[in-house]
Image (cartoon, rainbow, N blue to C red; front, side, top):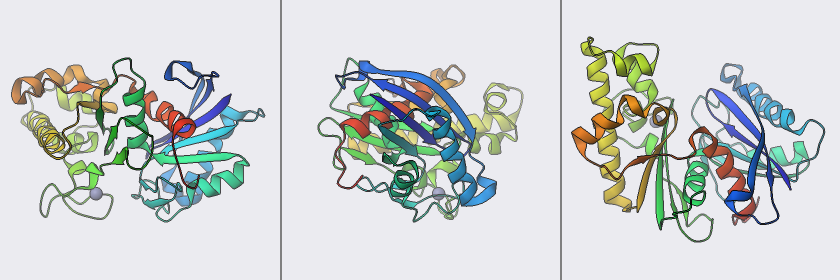
Length: 292
Ligand SMILES: [Zn+2]
C-alpha cells in the first residue's frame, strides 16, 4: 500500500511517500519520495494549513494514497488528532480538529499524532534490538520528548512528556507558548544561539575564543543533564535517545557531555530527521485510535 506522511514543524513541513509491504514490519517501510515546504507561520493559520496541504499534494501527484499520517508540533489528542495546544509557530492551531479537517479535505483516512511521539515510536520499533521502553528527546528549534513502552501502540504506551514546556527556571526567559522559564528556553538550538549571540548553533559550539559561546555550550550541556536526570528519575526508561537537529551535530558536544556528566548510556537517535515521518506512518497503520 501507499501512504503519505507529513511532519509539521515550526520552520518546515516535510512530506514523504512511503510504500508498505504486505507485512507491516518496520523493514517493509520504504521511503519513495521526499519533499519540504516552508511552514509560513507568519501568514497565520491559513498559511500553515495551506503549506500542509501543499506538502501532501506534492507527494500525491494525482495518485491516491490509502492513508495520510501526520506528525505535528503541539499537544495532540491521541484518539482524535485534535490539537489541544500549539505555540505561535503554528498560529491558530490550538483547538484545531486537525485530523478531521484534513480527512474531509483529502477524502481519505488521516491520522495526526504529536511529533515527539512519532519520533519515539519510530526509534522504538525500527530497530533489531527493541527495548522495553524508549524515551526520545528531540532537540531542535524547540524541545520535545516522548516515552514509548513496548505493547500496543495506544495512549497508554505512547506518552508525550511535554518536556519543552515544563517549568525549569522560575521567572526565566519568556517562551513562545506564553509561559516563562520553560525547559526549551534552556535546551534547544534557539537557546544556544541566544546565549552565544550567534546566527548558527555550529558557530556557538565551535568558537572556543568567545566567553559567550563557551557559556552557551556549558548552559546547554547542563540543561541536558538536568533533563536526562529528570527522565531517568521519573520514568526509568531502558533507553534514552537524543534526536533532532542537535543530534545531527553530535560531534560538536556529545563527548564533552559524557566527560562532564557521564550518562554514557544516552545515545543519539538512529533515524535522524526521518523519524517523525516513519513513526507517524507506523503508528497510523499499527496503532489503536478511538476516533481517527
Ligand atoms: Zn513554553
